[in-house]
Amino acid sequence: MNKTVYFLIDCSGSMYGNRGDAVNTAMEKVVSEAIPAIKAQKNDDLSISFVVLGFSDAFNGKVVELMPRTELDDFDHWDAIESDMFNGGTPTGAGLKAVIDDLNGGRRGEPDPNAVAPVIILISDGEPNGDNPTYDAVMECAVKGGPNENKMFRKAIRVALGMDVNDTGRASLKKFGSVSAKMASAGVASYYDCSEDYVDDFVSILKSVTVNASVG
Image 1: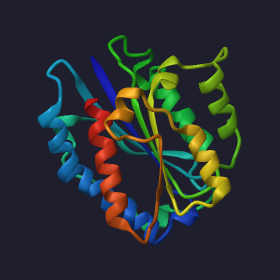
Image 2: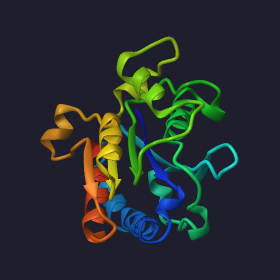
Image 3: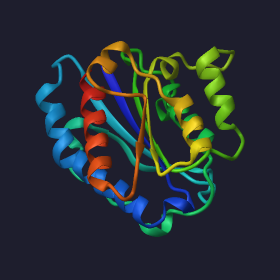
């Protein structure tokens, strides 16, 4: 069985500064503390890999691969996102489409027949914008199904971490989240309010979600 854990990181201009720094700090802790915990708890029959994507309309194509697919045993460092990469708007829909494209086979050309439901962790500080596709269109397909749906995306453990979001942004990000009853009983929520002013809390949440969702 193969499980992919996706980190989908908002690289828009409003993430520049403390919020971007908090993301880098948290990802470093994922490597140094969450990954060893996952190795200690992982079922021997489960293979886990990680993909990190960044999205911003300042990128050519709106989505960049911050870390290519990396197996659990090889996820031993984090290359910090450079500060000048945090620029532009927030095309969250394009980020989600990139995940769906990977689930559909990506460079492999066809879906992984041994895949189990993935984990998608979305980190953002604002209301999604942009089109082709819009965030709402992707989420409507995920919730209601349709001719272009991806069942693995619908089944995924989806957790959103909102960094200092306003009410509108919070409502949008909450649409993304979906966790199983098992995950909920383990203390994993589908949405978390986080703040750049409380980096330790953000780090703790991301580590906990990563561990529990990866091995749950």
